Amino acid sequence: MPAPNYLTLSTEKAAECRRLFEFAGRIAALFDSPRVQSSTAIQATLDDLLGAVYALVLARNHGYDDRLHALDPRDIHAVSVRARDISIGQVRTEGKWTAGFCFNNALFRISAAYHRALKIVTGNENKKLYVESLLPAVHALHPQWQNANLVKIHEQVNDLKHTAEGIYRGRDVWFDEAVSALVELMSLIEAWEQSGSTAQP
Image (tube, rainbow, N blue to C red; front, side, top):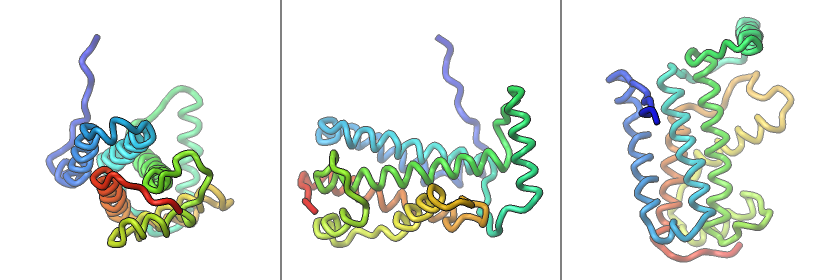
């Protein structure tokens, strides 16, 4: 079996991704926890959360920049060119579109992991409960926990899913806010792992 290939980051890009590497280390440490090992729900959530970290590393590697403006005709033309390339099997692995693709992937994963983590923390893994109905119980159990960036990402993802224009008018979430959302979500999961208790909404 061939040896795996690894991404080669420049010294500058590696420095920019330092916090993301730390998150991966924290996720790895959680997998050593007996409580995590006994919960397939949290294991699956951490899998998606690691995917978000991975996507943010790739976004940074591909030169992701926060877009402060709506899409313009040049952006849409680039999408049509990309579609034609893919239709003949030419799949680019770099560029701004790829960077944006990776960033969007991270946002969806963070939003999903956030919702699922709230269910786990409240002991409602198998119930169809929305984020808003889960939050009071989570805050009662962890009153110091902050989630402003997670709320912003979750709202952005809902807009991407449910508004006709998607991100045409631009994103409302910056790269640093996505990283801060990881801080918030990791702190909640680690608190759950250490507490050994849940709260019912």
